[in-house]
Length: 130
Image (tube, rainbow, N blue to C red; front, side, top):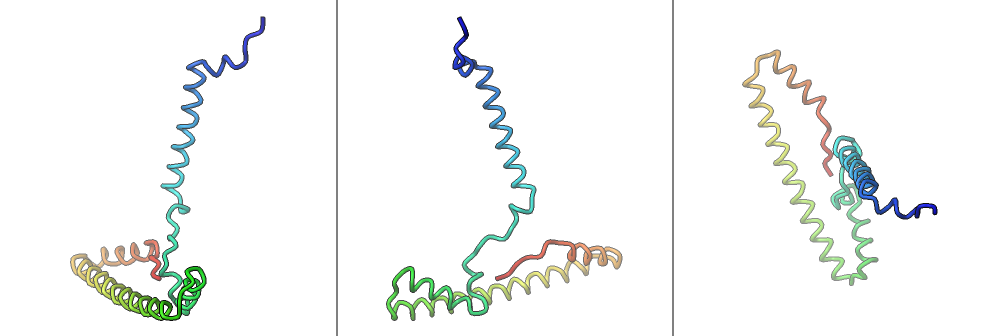
């Protein structure tokens, strides 16, 4: 009498092997995402839409999708303007903090270290600002 082919699936060794294959695949995928550039791509922040006329596109999208009244549109436009002004102020402050930190570090280093530090900064990944 031939063995039942479904009996193999009940074997704990087969189940263990399948579980280990699944676990290894999951681990490989997680490590690939962690250590590749694909995972480090910039996220899609709403701020990206608010540069160079993008505010109008965002506002039009809001009007269409949310069926805004003219008064709501006017209020949201003011909110977007305020938010962008606030964002640019914070960005300017961050640029100043970075520059101050860099100059303080350079004062501590000798000329050879300063050259290496400048090279390290050039090689560092570029930060995207929106």
